Length: 267
Length: 252
Image 1 (cartoon, chains in turn cyan, yellow):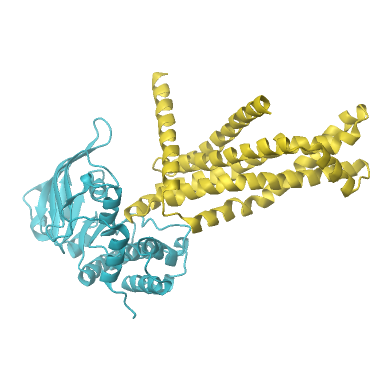
Image 2: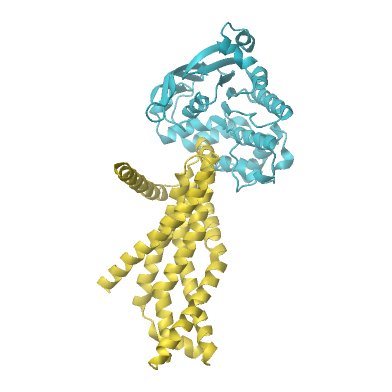
């Protein structure tokens, strides 16, 4: 059995956490009137409205400091929203206790800007770390198979015994993505996946994002400044300005927008 | 003045909540046994050479320095007992704890601080893994258990150092030396001194974790967390020692 069945892992994880939450289909992410500020006079999000459909790749653009990363951190409960409705899988995450929030988190993958690989662990340990904790019924062999499969998905099977310090920037991103995939998330949040990479590696990562979406049928939110990545991966683009969604549409429609500020992203 | 007072109270409040969370998470399963054992190995076993060198020098120097004063009163025969008592009751626990504050507390502060800055702690959280349980509870429990063992180890090595110090000027057999050491020791010398080392260990781990876990974003904060962990842990050791000596004096 070379491929560990996706459903087996999900079921094991669900059994382990016993979440008791709504798992019915619907708009996967639904945000209404989201506000977030850090101290006085530092309002970052001022009423963001956003809906993401199942299987969609949504690209979020905006200037640095416009609150793009804060937005996706609110989605996984890393940052608590001040006000607004934040529904993921039809569940308002603000109303969840820790255990229920963790059950949602397992279904969401998060690729950090700097990959956030655990420095003290090898690639194998990085990948098996979340799996072993959430799927205690899995045998060592099944964990190993799952690790191999995730590494195969990102084309880095040979890096299994390397330490993160031995990896290049592009490899770290791929391993970060493999670690995200190990729990078979239904949603993947990418925080600037191509930042700091050369053009060729950036394109490879963008293609990888697409192939993962096709293979695992994931829904994605991609925060990026890289317009080539946005063009390649985005089904729909939104632009964040002054804490609200300023523009929304396909790459082509926004590129030809009447608004010069919107067009300035595409120059 | 008001602002710094406010900050001080806020820091004290946060530290109290951090300690309360430690006890909550430490009791609640699942337990990170493997990581706890790994931390015991890193904190305990890997600190042994440093503690051994320090212990040996403490015993040797204490003996050489005390000898002339005791010789003036013709009380050189008290030297083994005096060295053993000084080491076990005060010098070995405090010096070993200070060494551990420098090595372990700063190490934990820097490690967790850099994990915070590079979003590794956030990565654990979004993978639905409790970073507090995995990183903080295991380290604090390991220091609480390992520092007392390191102190006992330093006691032993320090007494051996005393034996070497005595034999620089005179010729005393190992058997005679240890007979004098043991006859001068009482359980009341050992027990309170050992109990306080558990508190030393607890606060060395806790302060390192607190400083690392609450580090601000940016690489500069990693250095600050490590530095602040050593200073605060060292100060905490002296305060705990003072309280322990007062309590021992009161009850024994």
